[in-house]
Structure formats: C-alpha cells, structure tokens
Length: 279
Image (cartoon, helix red, strand yellow):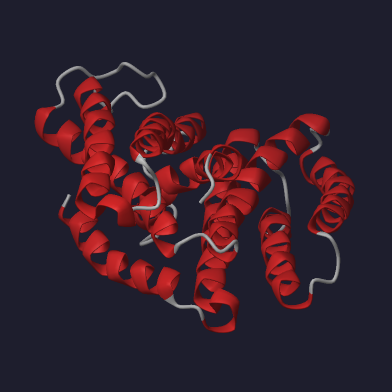
C-alpha cells in the first residue's frame, strides 16, 4: 500500500507536466505513450508465453509483440508533422501488412496458427491502439483538461477500489479471475468516481469542458469501464499462474497496474468525445 502511495506521489506531477508540455507536437507525451506501449507489450508477452507455451530458441519472438503498437504510434507522430497520407489509408495498410507478417511469425514460433494470431491481435490493440488514443486526444485540439479528466478518473477509480477493498473489503470472490477483489471495493470506487467527477463540474462551473449531463455520463462510463483493465490483466495472470506482474517485471509491475484503468477507459472516452460531445 505504501509503495502505491509513493508511486502515485512521484508519477502524478510528472504526468501532469508531460500532458501539459506542447513543444515538438507534444514530444514528451509521445515518448510516454511509446514507453507505455513497450512495457505493456513486454508484460503481455511474458503472460502469453506462459499461457500458450510459446516455443523459441531465443527472445526474438518478443520483438513481434513490441513492434506493431510502437510502429503505429511512431507513424501517427510522424504524420502530425508531415501529413503524408490520410490516416485511414495509412493505418489500414500498416495493419494489413503486419497482420499477414505476424500471422506467419507466430504460427512458426508457436505452431498454433490462427488462435495465437487472434490472441496477439487482442494484445496488439490493448498495447498499441489504446495508448495511441491518449496521444490522439491531446493532438485533436481538445482542451487540455479533457485529457487530465480521463487520467484523474481512471487513476482515482483504481486507487479507490484498492484502498476501499483493503480497509473495508469483506465480500470477496465475486469474480473468479480476481478472487481478492471485493464487492465493497468495486461498488465504493464506482460511487466515488462519479462523485468526484460531478464535484469537479460543480467547482469549475462554466469553465468545465462538459455540461452536467455530459459529465455524469462520462463518469458513469468510466466507473463501469475502468475496472475492466484490472480484470483483463488479472485474468491473464491467473491463466499464467502468476499472482503479481511485479514478480516477473521487477519494479515495473506495480507501475503498469496504475495505468490499466486509464488504458481501458481511453477508447470509450474518445468515442464519447467524438460522437456525443462537441468539445
């Protein structure tokens, strides 16, 4: 618990500045997103290797877990400077090429063919596309508080579930993949996430980028969606026979846990911004 508090105290000011800095098309945020993609890819590779018994004489197979997300993020960043191709064509072509290539690579490495490719595709979306959405939100001229709001609610939901569950959790085992998580932790985080979001709307008033109904909807969606990041990782850990990612990513497992809720919330949050809100 103390470690989580210390990590939060260290990372929150850093993340605030990284999101705020605008030089070179938000270079710091780009590098942060790229590192987040790399470390989540590394974690996913280790988990899936244990679950699906990937066979490889060396660690080169891990490269194909790191590359897809990193390449897409780098291409997007380059495109913000040069606008070389329409994004849809650029990403569709890149995705198609990598899909064909990775299918052949994973089939050779694992001998499992299409099933392994589909698992890799899920990993690719989670570790590549989801981090990229964080950078896209910043680049599309939304007010900077919009991105802060995503980080705040995602981070707060994760922290509230952890602390409430640790101090008041009694009803556990409601989810088989995460038996130590409690009903009190999830329900308390759900209520407090919505309460914090609405409180910010009240404090900032008309300066807040969302009206009352929009704020309530965003808070509700994140309160429901954010825990899925933690559950997704917990399910993978249980299948791999690993209780804690920090056991095989020393010093990084706990850090990555902090961003699970934010990563899982990012695409839904972005859809709300683009389709339902004029922000």
